[in-house]
Image 1 (cartoon, chains in turn yellow, blue):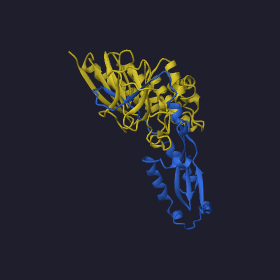
Image 2: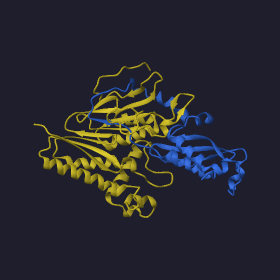
Image 3: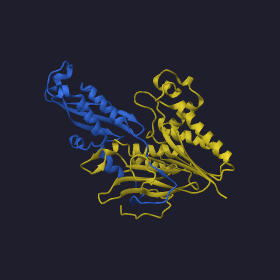
Image 4: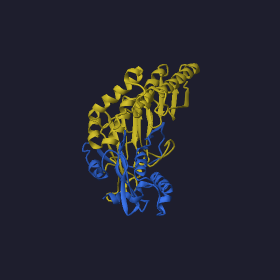
Length: 264
Length: 135
């Protein structure tokens, strides 16, 4: 007997798809979903920079100081700082104007907290607008085609990776709508390091941070990420004859066999 | 080099550039206005937007104003480094296997992709318009 329930939750102006398999009861599933959603909404209440009354918005505007901040905000800011050091500065929540903006990790931080409410559910999958985490059984995760704008669900994908077993999470960064449209006509390359970077690991926040850092800092950051024990798939550039040139770390959890290797 | 890059801003940016033109008509027609920057309307002048940073890097726009109208938009910075460094960086991951990936239909449970949009370039562009007295 297996049961599966999938819901789409909204929080932080994003969609979160939550799949619960084999929950002990409908009531248990329902209560897990509610607790999960509450955690996301609570994060929004703490960190939204679009709502001037949140602690983070008050800190950013100077209306409040660090001493006024709830423990969760301090935790996230500490996390940002430790990842700034770990990524050699490629991930940096400090804006030049002196404001600390942790928005980049709040989503995955909130999801990670929310998943602690899924303890009664033996197998689950969370798809958080492009960042994915799973537990209790293998799930097939498509790597989006960077040319696809908006929600890539249902589109063709560049490959499939497995999480929920050896790896728990995959996060992908890249393809900012504006930057992606800036091409260097001399080299024919996009005017950024990579089109897209996907990172697989055990911790969703860590994957998210490194994916962002790799897009911001390029090849030197890739080496750091691999050194930190993460697996990386980089979509480097489009090919004139179609498809993409990509780089894959040795332990990338590919589910669909190896695509053709090309000479360096 | 920068001039060459100017030609490549398309899509979302073009819309904003269009908005810039829309904001500019009083100057674009070559008619004098009370704006103190109107003296700059003689010949060509460039205006740099402020560098705007987010987690993806730093973005900076530069516009060229000729006779009071925006004639060029350049990304001085788009992401952390100059566009010129792209080739160097994509070649420099020695321990990785190089692959060719094609978009295909696979059966998947979820998709991992970038869901992040960067308004930083547009913000910088807005600053350049302001600097030029066009808004």
